Length: 349
Ligand SMILES: [Zn+2]
Image (tube, rainbow, N blue to C red; front, side, top):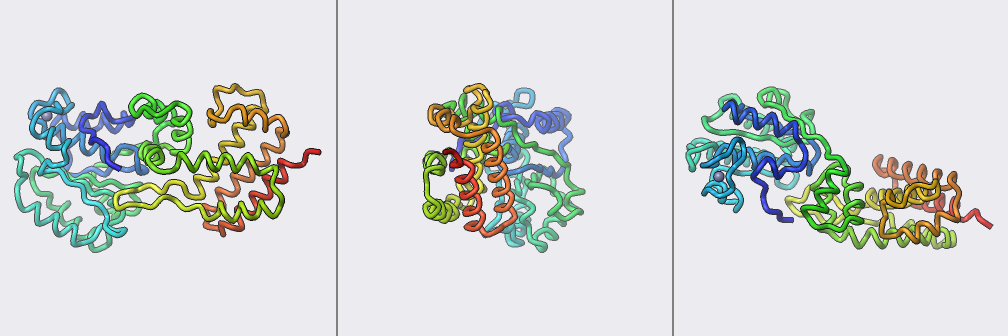
């Protein structure tokens, strides 16, 4: 996935507190040698690093915002600013060789005669050797260099590294914040934006990755299967459970941090379906339905089920999500769950 890089703080979605911390450091010219940005993937850590790099290298900065027009800003946007680089794990880890190359580069002053900004993405994937080597750099930080370490949480980093960084926490985004962004900035239809925002679990990056994958098609297919459950025989239900338990997440590319469309997403979609049924059954407003493109179908199905049956169905799905997270056998989990859902929805008659 390629997006136009963000180089202005005002273009970053949410994260007001993190922005304030960085902007104050810029205004007071009091940047540390290293920041540690913590938070789940897709909440703006890398964008914030770029905005910071732009602000401190821009030739005509206004307040704390990069101008977007000068040669440095244009290079940053084009991905060819010589003093900005992102180091990412290779085959699952950040290796000592990568840190050594970084250290070689540090022997030279920044090319554009401003600040060199180096981002260590998924810094918690540093091997022990790499961590120890990097610690040496942090102990004697080269002039005019700023390091930004991104990590989900500091616990997996060497405490001696953590203590030399200034920590900035990035919180998961609210789902309505994500939804508004998808609708207004990405022109995603409201009904789909709602579903993506709810499933993104606070990560805008994840919502966008879903939108760019075959997830949207898969979701329709899964919803259609959910509708069939009450009508299927026991044998057919077991076939369906088998088929669904093989749902694989989309292939991951080197820089793709998100697993989209796996079993947990499928269960999330099913849970959303039953939550909608429960809402309509309980007399809730149609406007609150998450599967807004299936309202007539939902209404029809809700008529045939009791509140208790719907509630128990949701509990079954909740348990299934927990079991999959605990790495229980997917086929067994899906068989049990599908049978429960069928039983709860076909007691009529
Ligand atoms: Zn500029």
